[in-house]
Image (cartoon, rainbow, N blue to C red; front, top):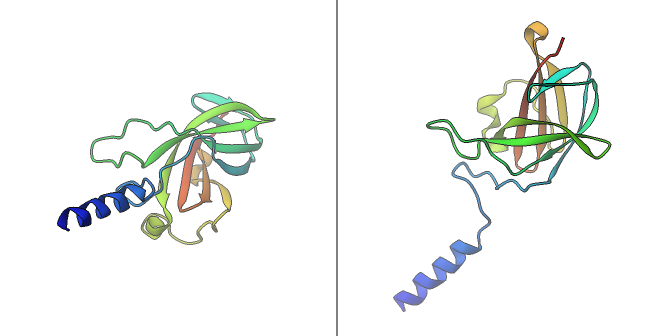
Length: 143
């Protein structure tokens, strides 16, 4: 009887979707995060990206985490124009449950996106809220 309970618990545990330590659902490559409009030229992966509207999607690739950093706290995203990848950059991933500790003031509504110019006009922050996560992409302004 004890073995049956153990086997049942093991089967139930394996049936739960893959999640990280922080409770975030594992990202799926190719998932669209939506579109964003950049009002000025920025640098993406060291290359200039013109102002315009871009689709943003997850790649499934994750950079190597720093010491003490959760392995799923960052993910690469792609910027697409006309269905073609025109840039790739790292996005910081913050679960909706944890966003209050990270962001003050107005939050991005579920399913929404916001592009902000940060103090000094040196950086653009793209904030996308999809599923149970917020994705922050910080891009240096290009001259």
